[in-house]
Amino acid sequence: MMSGSVVDNTVSSGNSSAAIPTDISGQILDLDEDDDLEVFSKDTTLTDGSSFNASMQTSPASMINQYKFEEDADTKDIFVTVDNPESHVTAIETYITYRVMTKTTRSEFDSSEFEVRRRYQDFLWLKGRLEEAHPTLIAHPLPEKFVVKGMVERFNEDFIETRRRALHRFLNKIAEHPIFSSSEDFKIFLTAASGELTSHKKQGPGFLSRMGDTVKAVAAAVRGVRNRPQEFTEMQEYVEAFSQKISSLDKVTQRIVREQKEYLEELKECGPTYALWSQSEEELAEPLKNVAGCVDRCCKETEEQVKNLSDHLIPVLHEYVLCADTLKAVLRRRDNIQADFEAKTEALATKKADRDTMRNDLDKAEDRLEWANNALKSDWTRWQKVMRTDLRSAFVDTAERNVSYYEKCLAVWESFLHSQRTDAEGNGKVDFS
Picture 1 (cartoon, rainbow, N blue to C red):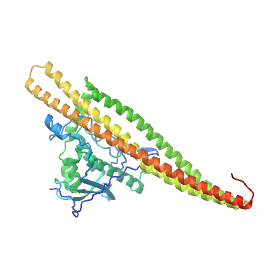
Picture 2: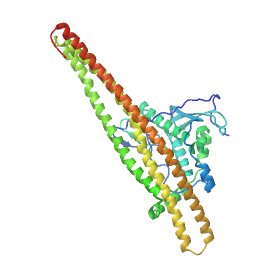
Picture 3: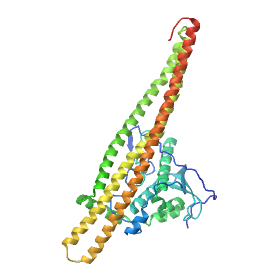
Picture 4: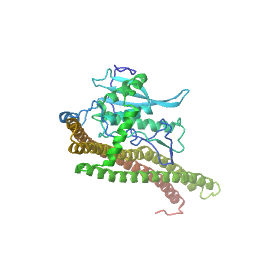
């Protein structure tokens, strides 16, 4: 029985998913020694090995049943929220935990609501377990093992909030996944008390086992794949092209935000300059004061615009930069599984001893390859649909915010022109037409 904190039995009906905000326009500082200073993680939780969980279903029938992805999921039966960060200080370390609240109507859960606290290492463990059990499914990226220079302080509020939203996004993507969301490890992560989770984490593969998987992965990578199916070659080509485009767009957008911030700082100096000038130019005092007011109002709108880009567009673009890295790792793992199958096929053809054992191993390798291919093909379709929805939404949101920003700035300067026309008509001095 799960022993996480259970709260009252009300089930939420809203969707608490939030975008990942992060302004990564600054210089990057590597901090690999501290697992709690994370913003987005590339696929470092698992090697590209071909290890399989003991519970992995490999028969053709189970593959068809397990990997039937629904086209439309109108009903959501699990809601996860990450909030309330807390710092913890011990004699050995200082770290941050986050409250993870879950509301669900699923029958496999002992209650409808759970509340636990988790640190970054727990999220990392969850992602690793999901990838270990399902090496060719596409797991959402976690926060990276670097931070923005100037945000190194682990208790910086902006940094903690950035990371909280990233972890919230990760769990909600897992909750929306048709296979990952039914994982026993995901359930334990959401419901188990800290001590129970620690015990469960110790049940995973040991260091020697992981090293063995790494060696196998390296050997498979060296051998390579002789007859990769065309559809996976096309996937690989698509991912490479997607990675280049999204990375370029991510970098350009970050540069635009940096330049807008510089423009904003310059603009903030203009208002006081106009105001100061008005004190020594009696004839121009009124229009100078008005210009100063217009500049100040545009400063506020520009500041909001920069914040919107940093909080809404950049996070989505960078998220899919990391997703591209995840896809590359998934395709490598699929290739390693195929390379293992091809190696066993060759071994059976060249050796006469222990042929029964080798035939049995070959059959298992063939099942694993079929399982991996079916899983990837199904999840690939799902991922593309989600990706296009996310990016389209981000682009539309950015367009709407841009229109609002320029309309507000236009209205500010039109009001200035209107006031000057009125004054000119009253004085009969200047024609602004």
